[in-house]
Length: 330
Image 1 (cartoon, rainbow, N blue to C red):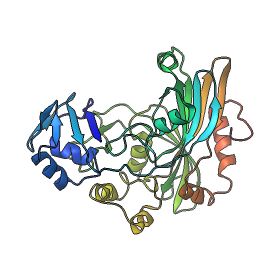
Image 2 (cartoon, rainbow, N blue to C red):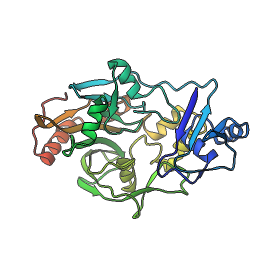
Image 3 (cartoon, rainbow, N blue to C red):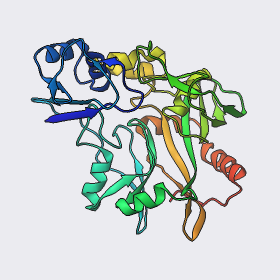
Image 4 (tube, rainbow, N blue to C red):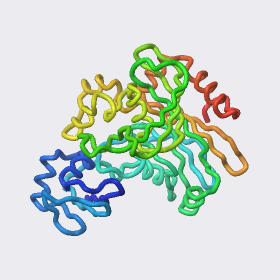
């Protein structure tokens, strides 16, 4: 299988070997060094070398022999379908689009295979995040809603199960975020006054002293925004391999599989972050809410600790938005 990857903005000025080790985690750094030495990696059509530096726009190519993509969930939650749009629930554990590890087994490919048509996601979800994903049906619909003067998505609201006791009420986090070149976890985002402006509003729904359940309102949409802001507040998302335990389990996974004892230490197999509610302005249907119940088994187990959570979340959502909510999830 031929794997290709072009460096995007913000990814340059990194050595070839370290870029591969961070973005294509099915091999260790040592294995990538060996493959580079063997001439198996091309940069812009020319065989790369171990000391080579990469820059934005460079195209990497690697023909993987005997590589099998990892298994991912093969189901989804149908919620709404119109002539131009598709709203579904994504399970935790499957990437929306191709990653360094998964090229074919993506959520978009799963949907395209099921519906037999061209579909384009209108926003992002991390591989381990479950919940609502809105897609455009066809290129014309994608261009229409991506460039619309009035936003189709008015608001996105996530449930997060975090470590520790968060104080009751509402917390507004406006820490700008940026990567750190010296961070061993290169994809992690850090509070940085020179970073991109960010704003997340956290509504604490309940806590039992050990864990807290939070409704997170995205005001901006930066990479890892909810997770980075919660970690900065001292309450990382349960199961988060990057922002909890100092990134230890993320780094461990780059050189091998995690064990069940690792997942017990993390508290969940996937991060307990769920895109629960979305507020949409459909043509002719302004101010409509939709919900997803496609929680991971770990997340559902934690939600059971807070039996009144949905009433509290809906009351908070209705108060924030001054909009009617449907009685049940769609």
